[in-house]
Image (cartoon, rainbow, N blue to C red; front, top):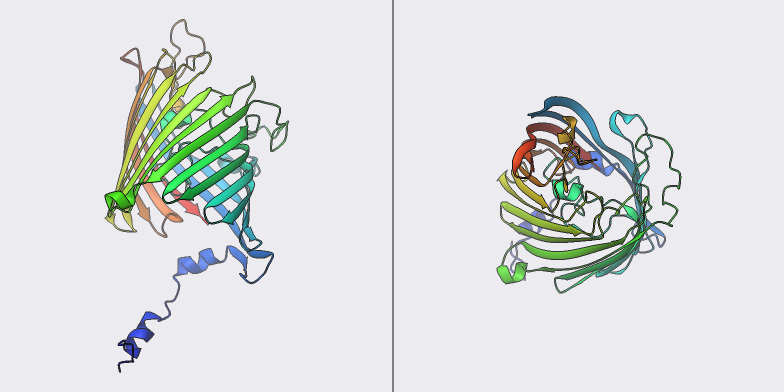
Length: 387
């Protein structure tokens, strides 16, 4: 039968046919404890959490180590309030082997969204720099660990006030951060100045801008971002306390089965061994089976001005300690040039909410051009679960 609009009733019925949710959708749906868009005060309240567990086996010139690590375990909640213009997030973490069930706050903030193009966030949150390696959720990233260059910059969550906006594919952001914010108890069970710090340390500032060129290039995504973080450091700062200035630039390309991220960092104004350093990586992924199996690769390079300006990865290259540079105090696990290459895969059971990962990373830390620091291969397998 054809209606006056030229569309069969059968076609209309097929278009609105009920699709039963999968067992995973049903299970994950239990995390939403309350949802009512008509309630003027609270529209949604849901639990959030993640567990990242991984096994590593590192085989290096200077030794071998292997272990299962409870890499991340977090639990908390999200809430949407007042016509969804106010969002609240609170979650905490435990540590490896769950030695401390409570090892401090991770995110604890309120975010006000007066409209779809503007948000203001206050509380403990991420400094707005390193658009992919840092600001992307670890639930979604395709490698086990962030890049070496980012990990040595001493950037972590801080008590902050940030503003983000976008218009016509142009994105901008700015923020101010307290450097005294504790990052973790490190198993000591003693927070000292409390979850949000005493706010009497140094202060950091960030500003950034980006543009998505996807329309001009006729692709799904072609985002270019430039971010700058400046830190008025003080002795004893727990975060953002290693360099005066950090600049990051990010290019994220996506089209079809391909996804490519390139990110570069330049950090200046450090003291002691933390001389100026430049680092970059490129991370392509390819979907062998869309939404199911993905190949991952990454190449990283870092170069520093001083003989001990580049730091080996804490996971897991320092499991086989690299000796001191003769005559240079504090130079253990340090050099001046770093290379690494990662190859792996992700198998998606329920998207990024439940997936299996496997990979191997070769890395080399050089000193004055000589392979006398660290060279080794780390094999990894693991599970990522989040809700």
